[in-house]
Image (cartoon, helix red, strand yellow):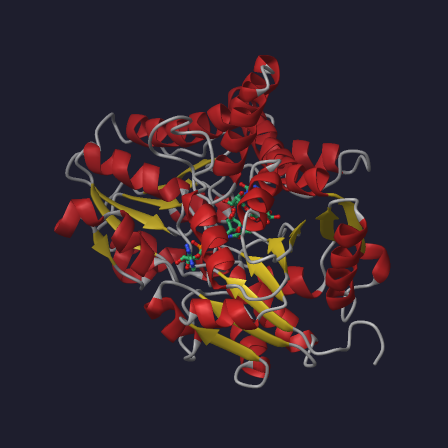
Length: 461
Ligand code: NAD
Ligand code: UGA
């Protein structure tokens, strides 16, 4: 058999936003290997076994269905599957620590360490362990120490293969990645293990896009990629505040600077702020590591990316309250979108959470409309009980509202009948477009007062 074709038992521990889609893609593109995904959450596993997947991601169901029960399996039998596996991807969550040393910054590695101990205890043969989760640089050293301190004579080779997919485009990103990064120890066994992983990806990713590196570079590159992406958003958002004061238009500025090939056009959309489970967590992680090495200036530099993001969210709500005559108490305000971006039901760290909470504190009557995120939104705002209304239909959601705030850039919000919406609202009717996706001139003509990011407002008063 040629390289990469011998059947391998691949296991992934953690069936979340990363584990599920990445393993579905490996199984679909490598029918010669068996791929099993396990999780401690039985409900999640059950959902992966059904057509009602636990996460919403365009085209995911098709890829899952292509391989499920052929060479893709979902299971809660963790120990049994560890025993059988040749290669184990670990894709458990690594949230920000909320207690003890490093609280609020460092990564909470308890799920990670539990998994490592689980692997040692259940294993009966040598294995390759792949870090898929995003981890602090040098975690592989700790992982190796835990794994190789076994008295069974087993050897575990740890690789770092960080995931760069973005939610909403996960399948496209996995199918045609900009690059696949695989870090290993530069020992004979490390390089041999790395080659096994290269061979798996080479089933559908071209060789020049599979980048290998030392293990620490791979771990650090993941944190740095997210930090750079978030930094671009904070940079353009900081400029959006200046545009609002100077009558410059942030979209025109972004276009003009983005045409410089050294800057590039992507990721320059000014917004209400970035959300998602990773940008903030990974930057905080970077800040914590820099602080630990005594690099205070480096830590402060990256911290400012988060500070601008918080400022952007805060000034959005402040403006809403200010222009609605300094009070929103008792006023119905409809949030168009709760997901942290379009094409996902994920609401983790969504700016909408902060904005909804601030409006509720101000005693507004908040109504939330989102095509995919209402279940998560209900959990996020559970403490407010029946004070918040969840309504998928945007027309019903905005009836009798004083204002609409667009917080997620769902395409469906751009094609609504805003004439009809305007007629059903309390006057003066306000639109706060936190994503700059609507036709502001048309809204203004209809009668709305329109407030947008990085451009002067259009007011009827
Ligand atoms: P998630 O919370 O959706 O999924 C993690 C899963 O791991 C959960 O289902 C949880 O039950 C399971 N788990 C935890 N401990 C376990 C254990 N001991 N045994 C078995 N299962 C266990 O998280 P996610 O969004 O998939 O992220 C996972 C990692 O990937 C994180 O480090 C994250 O930073 C990184 N990442 C996420 C994305 C993304 O788009 N969400 C992209 C790239 C990288
Ligand atoms: C991000 C990275 O893009 C992925 O490469 C990475 O793998 C992932 O984090 C991770 O490690 O979890 P994701 O958070 O899913 O992916 O989505 P993005 O498209 O990066 O958007 C993040 C946030 O930034 C969203 O709230 C989005 O609306 C916002 N954003 C994005 C802007 O405000 N402006 C932009 O120009 C782009």
